[in-house]
Image 1 (cartoon, rainbow, N blue to C red):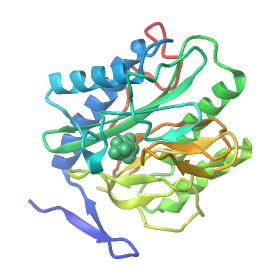
Image 2: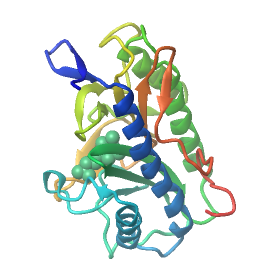
Image 3: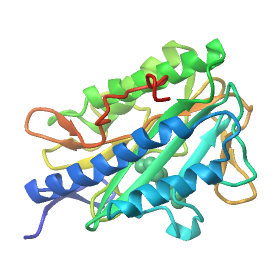
Length: 275
Ligand code: MF3
Ligand code: CO
Ligand code: CO
């Protein structure tokens, strides 16, 4: 069976997934979410991000999954682990140890039976998290969910971006412009591109079957970022803290389905006794 497509304004094809695609991404999304549930208890002061990456790879392979980032455009690891002022694409390393008080994003993408599941969450390292850091993490989670609340047929991508931007800027924080969410399915990064800022009623109109991520990066300071000399690690230009959450969603007849909800019921940190 071939999927329906619609064109975005640049003529890129946006796949409208059918029930088989939804069922496959339910499974891939669940494995991504299970990976994020699993890793929580290991996120403690002194752990290296390289060790977390190894655990993530092992967890996914043991369940029939393949870490999607490994070798993706030359990316060298099975996850992205981005502490503090790192915005995204932090490369895990045995030399990079997390310390008490860090906030850190862990972003995992798994391929299961040819379908992609992509999700990320913030974690607290230890129990002594500064009030500004905690507020930024809470704000970023609420921004993601406010964006997802706009994801329904007849709304436009700009409604999602606008909801996120409005909430972030009301808290005197800023939305990263240089990265966005993305269509996803049997490829990792597909049309449409999903800005986390924008104007209501603009951009692609949402239709049942569209599947994409909502993954806002919110900075405590200014929105500008720069990429370090490793070609991947993105940091805030002003070295302010940055946070991110990511869900993968599918547009349904009357709203959307989140494929990457935590089976353990976790939303944002702290994650109960386990973490
Ligand atoms: N998982 C990231 C996203 O949400 C992409 C990481 S690509 C990598 O789109 F190559 F940096 F790993
Ligand atoms: Co993504
Ligand atoms: Co991701």
